[in-house]
Structures are given as C-alpha cells and as structure tokens.
Image (cartoon, rainbow, N blue to C red):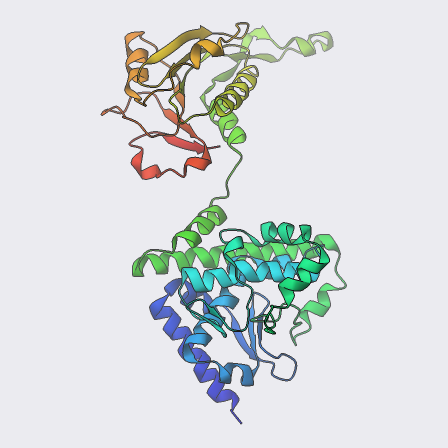
Length: 407
C-alpha cells in the first residue's frame, strides 16, 4: 500500500513541474495547503485554502494526469468557484456540472494538460467538457443547463455507450477542520462577507502569479481575458462616458450669485457656477456601423448632456469625408438624419481637419467608430475618446492615441 510520504513527494514534484512549465499554475498551487483525507474523500477537492486528496486516487494518476488534476483544482480557485459554491441558491447538481465545464476547458485547451480519461480529444470517461460551452462562465453555462428539460439532463449525466460522466473532484467535500460546519451557524450576510474576503485574497494571489507567468512567456488568450476582467472589472460604458464628461466640466462656487434655496432662512451661501462645456462628437458612418448602434450612442450622449446647465456640442458624421456638421446647445434639436450619411470607407483624418479649420477648441473629441481606418499622424492637443462596440474585438495597441471605451 502506498504511503502518505510517497504521495506527498509525488504532489511536491508535480507542483515544482507546474512552476517550471506553467508558472501561473505553479505559483498558485503553493497557496493551497496539502491535506490527506483518504478516509473521507474518493478523489481530490479544494476549498480555496486546502488541497485535499485521496492517496489511492493520486497514486493511480500518471505524472501528467496529476498535473492536469492540480490545474483543475487551481482553476476552480481562479474562477472563484470555491466561494461561489458556498454562497448560492442554485440547484446544486446543475451548479456543480456548470463549474466543471470551464475548469476542464482551461486545463485541456489553455494549458494543454491531460485529465484522467481525457487526452488529445479521447474522452474515455466522459468528463464534463464541450465546445458548446467554450468561452462561457459557470453562471452562463448554468442558465443554459437550467433551460434543458429533465430528459436532456439525464442524457448529459449518462453518456450513450455505457460511459458514465465523471467529476474530477468533489465539490461537496467538507474539510476535516470543521470550518464548513462553522459556516452553518453564520448568517447569509456573514457568509457573503467571508466569500468576498476570499475572492479578494485570491485576486491578490492571481496578480502575483500573472507576473511570474509573464517572465516565462505569454498567458493563454482565454485566461488573459478573464484575468483582465478580474483585475479591472468592466464598467458599463454608459457609466464610463458619464463619469468622463463629468470630469471635463468645470463646476465652481460663486458668491456673486448666492444660493437662493437658503435666502428665506437669512443664510447666504455661494451658488454653483458652471462653465460651458464644449464637446466635439464624430460618428463613423462607414458601412460597418449599424444605424441601431449609432442611434443608441446618440440617445445616450444627448441624455448625459442634458444634465449640464450649459454646453455646446459640435456634431458630425464621417466615413471618408465629413457630413452634417452641426453646433447644438441645450435647447437645440439634433438632425441625426443629416449626420448619419455616407456608408463608404473609413478615414478619421477629415474630422480632425474639420475641428482645426473651424478653430474649435473642444474639451474632448468623442469618436464613435469600429477603429478600422486611417488615423492622423499627430495626436491633437485635446483628449480623444474612442467609443467602440465590443463585438469588433479590436486590438487597442493599434490605436495610436486616446482612450477606448467598449460598449
């Protein structure tokens, strides 16, 4: 019978191998305390703090398969499944399945590591992995599974040719320290606070692991997108745009125009004095931008500008030349039909030329576009905000200047 010391050595060797081959996984693996729980666990498990294992299960794994299983446990932590599992009202069996798909995908597709019964597309044991769920989160997969009827769910659990779908690890395992039992006596708000703290701690660990991976090489594309979102959560574009415009406006207090709200109380306070904000706005009217997208942005922009007591917008449409130039204020209507013309090729330079020729000095230029066109060679003196639909999947490095907002 294999000894615990032999299994410990095997796991340590696997961790060191991950550190050399995949530093991101290797660094994170050392944040999990290894614990032998052979008597109560048939496979492996993690709670975000420990790596629980069954000696016989680990002993039967090849060295390469053990790397894959360790990666599986680590990615559960990276995807925050350990904290989400505790704090959820979802149907547990479906939630358990939903978390397996992205985790197995990461191991097999991102890190090119084998899993027990799965290697190079040969899914012997029918682990939960499917191209139908690639690039989806566990939450998104759960919603798809929830829409399936019971018969379809049974088909998912039991493969056709007698092969039974298996889990690499045990999500339900309660560790021997009694920690999970202690959570039963805590309120939902206390459990949520604990989960948030764990997520924050793992976020810090992930940032450190990313730096280690960068020294070795590039992070897999799918994982890079997730990490970017984790480290810098995506804020709704409407909120970003509103905050950006607010930062450009100059609001001050003036004693010359007192605050009338308090005069009846014989209290004199300064009133708010707001300077006029001037914004140049360009719409890319080339063939790749839909009328719906243009209208959505225009409506949002108009709504935001109405929050300001004084503003002027310099509006224009442009494909390879400028159309429908307009100057509008708080009480002016916008002729969107005059702006939304063109639908030809894309050249950004005419807009910058128009601003220069008309001697406009905007606080900023907002340019709604897909960013596929000819840019000016020189960056203008005013800031430029490129508003881009996320469907275009642009390379931000290709944009020579300005800030990008994805909507």
